Every structure is written in C-alpha cells, then in structure tokens.
Length: 265
Image (cartoon, rainbow, N blue to C red; front, side):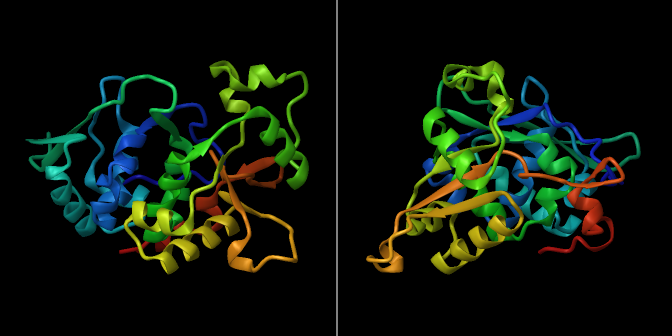
C-alpha cells in the first residue's frame, strides 16, 4: 500500500505532460469526478512511452478516493480516447490494468507540466472533487510573460532568483525557477470547462487559494462594483511553500494526516 512521506522526499523534478486539448475540447467537463481524480495520478506514473501500471490501491490513496470509486473512474474512462486500458492477471492472481496515455505532440502551449510532487506528497489527494476539476482548467488557460510575472512577484512578496534575466525565464532550462503562471478566464467559463456549477467553481478557487495553489489578484478600484472588477489568477505550479520544521520540509500529507483519513468520494 502506498504511504505518503512525512518529509519532502518526493520527486520535485519529474512531471506529466497534461494535454490542454483534453480541457479545451470539453472532454474534461464530461468526465465524472472519479475519472478526473485518477487521470493525473495515472499520468505521473507513465513512462516515456505513456505506459503506466499503478495499482488500484495506489491510485485510490494518491487520488484521495476509495478503491471502489477508482474502479468506477476506470470504467468511465474506457470510452476516453486519450487513454487506452488493457487488463492482465498479476503475479498474485489478481486482475490489474495497464494504461497507455496518448502523449501530446511537443509544441509551445500544447500541454502543461503536472508535477509528480503534487501527487506523491498527498496534496492532490487532499483536494475536493471541485478543486481537482478546476485546478487543471486554470493551468490550461494560464500563460507566462516575464514582465507581469516579476511585477506580481514584487506585489505578493516572492523572491526571484538572482541572475536570471527576462529572456532566461522563457527558456526551458529555467522553467523550474517559475512559481506560477497567470490566468484570466471568466468564472462561468471556468465552471463550464471544469464541468461544475459556478458556485462550486468559486468555492474551489477559494479553497485552492487557502492551500497556496492559487492567488486571486483583484483590481483595486473602489469606483466599480465587485462583480465588474478584473480578476487575475496566479496559478502555482507547485504549492507556494512547505512548512519548515527542524530544518526539514514537512509535506502536506504529514500535516493533515492524510494516511488515516482520505475518504473523498
């Protein structure tokens, strides 16, 4: 059985290339919550060929759902053309699944990096179904530009590594230096593409903000109504920070004792 680490011994380098067309095409909105919960978990286990073999128990733990819900999510994905499922009998004589994900064609803007650390640390499992539906949508519609990035870093108190120029921020080699990207979709669009109602989308964004995965920047103008104000979402690629304890970085899983009480349906 998979067990979340107590400290930050998770993989912070490797990632799954989440194809944006899954979101933009409406496929994501049509998937049930169980399938949305397990798809990124399968994705971060995939090798360079897009093949993965995580057990249903591991998927359940990392997705924050029960094994029964995992089976429901797998069944619903059988008609999902971005992933192919095949069953086999493992060494213990139990039925297991092999997953083959269609990897996106490499090209600017075709996918976003869904880091393995989001899953291995227990963070993804801690999210509600609404948060799991909305976060990939925000990542899909997020973009990066050096000048506004540096502006927002200054606004919210994030230090930028010394010696990195505007141009270097765009280069692939310095991608990991970025902490967030900027998204500006309207709330009703977020809800529609995520496959949730508007109130659920709003609630999910508030919860993601409290967990340091989103920062909602609102135009400061007292002369316009609240619903007319411009909102920009700073969507963090990984949690904004971990809590340091005794010179070690404690994971979200440890802080919330997710090993004992992950039961989201």
